[in-house]
Image (cartoon, rainbow, N blue to C red; front, side, top):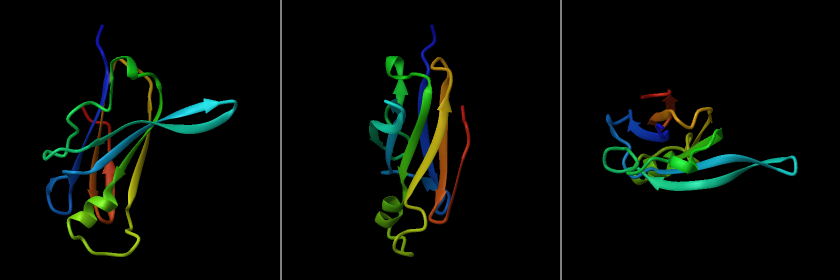
Length: 123
């Protein structure tokens, strides 16, 4: 049986470099007693290549559900000396994704600058 996984990477499109040192938090949507919430699953930091050293999800931890990836872009650009408005225009970028098949590989790249971002399902 093939084991799925969730991975990500970040590209700093303003400078044309990998997004190294960005904190990435992964949350899963929960429902308890009719109340919907989020539970923190994992916190990772992107490496020099803008990738996490390990998958965000894999194996038994990877179950069907709604997940949120939170990228701390404001802190990243601030640490790079990017000046701008306070608070930054983009601070915590939240990508909400539905993962329907735990046997699949879901790759969620983030292309980011201080004033814009985009994403897609990669391979």
